[in-house]
Length: 219
Image (cartoon, rainbow, N blue to C red; front, top):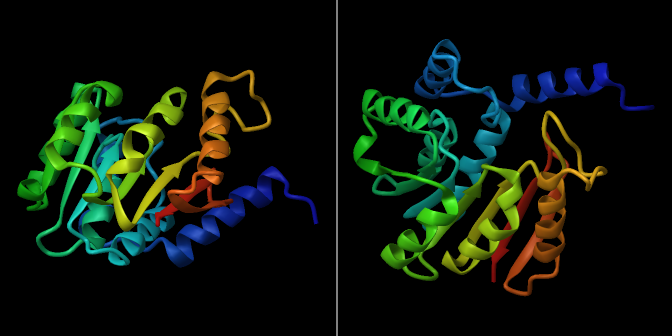
């Protein structure tokens, strides 16, 4: 049976209905972000629950996120971390960072989330110095696709043994797909995917969920 655009949309809606139930505060964050006019490229509920599940499979002490947007995925990561677990999240757009920081305060988790402002590749060296190698339980990358390969290389050694590196949109976005490598973002995603698949530091899988997820567990 062919995958039509209609079937794709219906399957996505089904996944969100069955697997994407949101805690009230995370639903409130999503609604507030829509009302504020933030871009709609945050992960969906079923992917958020997957992030929480991944975090629960680790020590749950520290997560690092590249691409805060409105704070939706960071809140999901906190759901899976320990009560003392914290998230460091990087955001290059001040209005998005302002919104996310206000949301973290509104939902009582501001002391557990460190929002670092700036371009990911500029901010990551400072974070690496702060936390040290092998210290991050979950890395989640969902930012500009053109930098995916560099983000992967900059964060791989930060992942603790048994920790996870997860990347969203490894097969496409709303405007491009992996079969068009003339697109700089997709070319970077392809380069990262092939690197990750052969990286002997990790056990790696590429999942056809939403627009694709890279899931790599540090050996």
